[in-house]
Image (cartoon, rainbow, N blue to C red; front, side, top):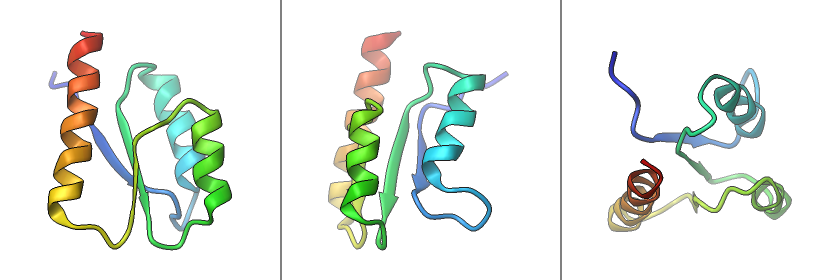
Length: 82
């Protein structure tokens, strides 16, 4: 079974928002590495994520180099945990 290294997830999705989805993912895998993104999210959504302990998010539109940087940061956090 292959473990997922990182999840890139939009905060706003049609069925449930990213925060709710993250809560469900973390119930299945408490050590999941999640990077949040959004082009429409209000600052309060990012603030809520910070209060929940998430620090990995990037606002759309973003440069591919910025996305690569944040994914590398996510993977280094995961490697440090393992």
